[in-house]
Length: 402
Image (cartoon, rainbow, N blue to C red):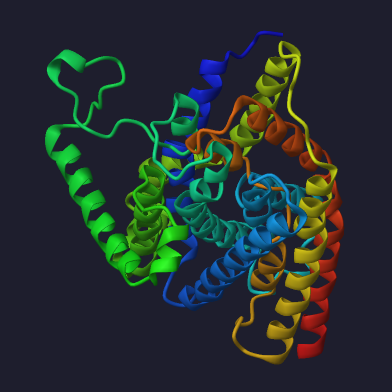
């Protein structure tokens, strides 16, 4: 209907990455994280790293075994950890489906917000790993290992825009409005994060380094910075009180600042789902004007579907059930168990199309990726079986502990 242009889609995607997601992350993580709940996030961090790294290994092995296109590897490795699970949680809240596992000392709204904060932490881990390893996975598409400049599409998807300070001749409507001290502070924080990540990177064995790209990504810096900001606001009692308590209980920033940031964050989930549809729609419009729109291997679709919507859900439900029922590693939070069971499930993340741009994939490869994403998102309602299984498993753990 020509209501949305491609440039507008890129702008919306950039807003989501640079503004709405950070706002959602800071408020949700900060409000839910405090001294009594901090330990609940350690299993989430560990599980996010474990299943993502395991998925990367599975993706590499299966791609080589069945001689599939390189883009199958990140499609197997990285699932949608943001818009889809957050939207599902909102639907489950409306339907009241989680009443059976909501703790007695908590409300449905609080439990859903806590689950969202778990998924956001998982999303940060998943996206950081995706942006640091994903382009390397797709380098086989362009046939060499050299770094090349990327187009605007790849930059937008990865949240990569010009971060330097423009000269006066370059000042335009995109020039930062922040005062120079604030821009210098941002650069200083970013450089410190880069030094720390480079230090961590230096400890990896040489074969591992060759499979990784550097940690130098604006999205990675922003995600880590926002996660640390949310953790600081949550864990420091005076700050938690000032930002998240009601006004009559000392929340001097809650009514006018925190609530505004929270409203911005709420835009992320709906906008992301809309952007996903827009990007796929643009890809199909391009295909109409092209004689050869790329071939999607049937084996690749089957492999991605089985791993993302069958195998990983079965593994995660079983593993988390065992850990929750037979150990004390996962604390006494049924919402935590349920969330961790769902984390590895779901269709591939849309950042794969952005990684393909970064890796200079051909147009046919990008068309094939768009087709595959459309098919897999059409199959994504089958995640209902994972939700039911995770809910029943969490209820079973609760029954066993009575």
